[in-house]
Structure formats: C-alpha cells, structure tokens
Image (cartoon, rainbow, N blue to C red; front, side):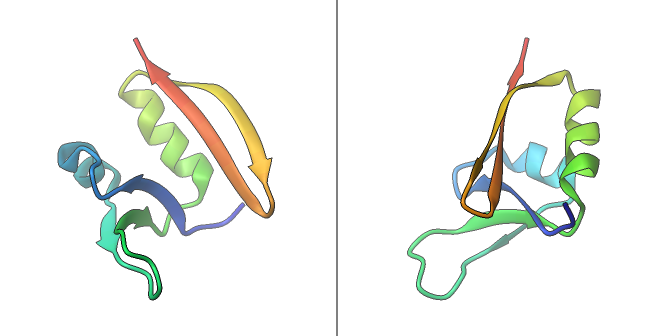
Length: 72
C-alpha cells in the first residue's frame, strides 16, 4: 500500500499525531476531522513499533485496510 495513511480522528493524542508527522484535515461532506500522513502504512507501523505498539489484528473493509494495535 502507498500513502496517505489515516492515523487518527479529531480526538487522537496530539503528541502521538505530532510524532507521526500527521496533519489534521476535514474532508468535504464529513462533519469530523481526521489525521493523516503521506507515509505508507508500513512506515507508520514501524514508527509505532518504536513506541511499543504491536499489531493485534488486520482486516480489509472494501478497499480500506484497518490495523488494530495495542501498547503494553
């Protein structure tokens, strides 16, 4: 997969979003904001692994891939 990668919603930890280099945006037609980065998912997952996050599960929803992570 290539970027951009959605990494959070409007309630996400701003310090974590800054670490990922994420920017907040509001897409036309949505009544919420989301954080995204231009990095590919593998780059984002590598960054999160350095903070102790581990992939618990992954699934595909239509043409969207979703990863569930957990940090001990």
